[in-house]
Length: 168
Image 1 (cartoon, rainbow, N blue to C red):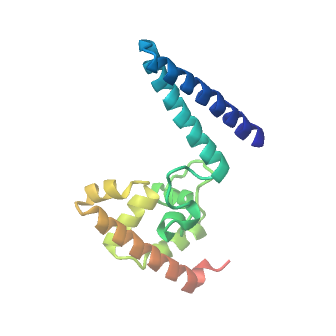
Image 2: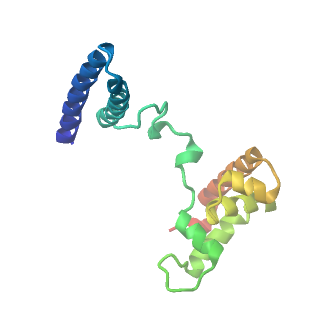
């Protein structure tokens, strides 16, 4: 990783030298130097971006790192593959097929939800739809979908800690 970073820093030095040489050529009246200088400038920006990413370990420009994401963005209450297998009810020889016990646990967790919460939760977590697509399908707002899914996650979480079916 250090070799990669050192290589990009060397590239940055070379681009800076080329950029300055083209600046002087453009000031002297060279027409083609302006276009080349613009391309070199864009390359410098890209290299700076990569160097910042390699040095900080996070995408440049992000205000919040993954460790500071909101709970609903990083917390998965149910394994998405298991939830998708539950929704598809496939019987093929897929490794994501559920046992009867796992299917019973999911039914138990979803039983505490209202019909609308269940619809939103199954569409977003089981079918893989975005909040926006789910809202369009159900003719409700995107914020309503988010609220319903958040409520559903809270209920499922409470059900998971209080239900005897989730032991073991």
